[in-house]
Image (cartoon, rainbow, N blue to C red; front, side, top):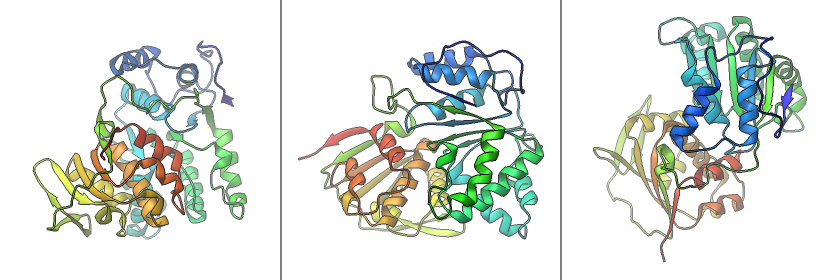
Length: 345
């Protein structure tokens, strides 16, 4: 079942599955909106009603970038009355899952036992995935196994995605292989479209926080430091320009023209909460791999609340004109719109 924008803002009847977010009330959303200085739109009000009284045991929030899906999930997650919960960014989780399966000799259950332990040491009963997606056929096979395993465990799942279930694994040659998983999602998840027609990440008068405190400086000729520093990220060394008390200094080439992945950016985010990235080239000239790494970097930085000061040759919108734009381009542009924009002659 799927809601559409414009439905009445009334709660659904109490019958039905137990909500994934136990103990959460409409007041939690009202209080969070007041603290953030925002007003929910009609689609968000509709989603709140469905979250509080779902038609299925799991929730799938989807819609265009910047519509408030993550905010809705995070607000409910924070108010949920259980310690047996985990909230994960899918970019972080999936590489970790691959590595854990390898460590456990291809035993998925053992890998999930390792990765999905709650803060009290017991298996999670509520699992939230932000930015759920499937682009690769091999990942599609593993996602099917993952969903089956989590269904069997009785784990309540809530996901946000820029894609409706039918848009997952869109490649026409491989989409059919994922259709059984799509059918399972439709059958087991309450699928809620969140699209009030406005990108809420566009800057407003309210105080920015986290990633949105950053700045994109177009036309900057700020030089990079000549020296190099090596920092340890898990099992690999990453070269940057320097690390001082509060800020990690790096060039675009350091971060996006070397073979780094989401897990590397996540470890760098743990190292320092603020970054200064210089020598960002014209984005319409990027290679496909560099464009995708920039998108991954923005995803991780936004999820981890890293403030970034980008010193760039041009405007970020030119990323759309790259020869091979990154996957999930609308989400990347939406997140970059949240930054303060400066232009230098």
